[in-house]
Length: 251
Image (cartoon, rainbow, N blue to C red):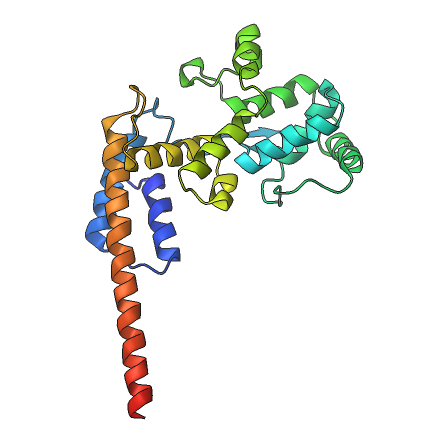
């Protein structure tokens, strides 16, 4: 069995130019499987997806969440506009959502035309439920309360975000822990939560009671492997440069 969480973290190290020993891969994979096997464990969850007609919606990244919040501050916050905006954004996860378009109203028109073209035969309720599933999930035990399941409870919970959106608050918190802004923006909400929890553990910040021991074991192990691999990489590069300089001087 392969841990998707461990695979992603190991791949990131390899992209940094590190060589990860087989023993470290096996060790991290075992710990990753240990936490991913638990259905209630939110930190290791993969992005949620939903198919509506021929359109595939995907759980938004932090950048997409912030983008939607900013657009709704400019546009009319009516249900039709919001539905078209969210549908377009969640169906185009590969686009660059880091900056607002120069002409937000023209962008809103583009969203309206797109949703009529690709989802015109679907009911608004079906589209809304697909989007809400990607954004919030459907199991109240996950702590993600979709609007069509909990009604007023969700409105109260969501409204407590204050002047900053929930996504923006997570983004700011991630940055205060030293997580790269670009990395935080590309993460989904559960993934960013995992990164924040890892940073909290590594900074000896007290985590909430419901966090599992397996979480600390995994991320502390990952941190140890990262340090060892990066140190080995740097020493190898330093040795290679020294040898190159010696050859140049003797040549």
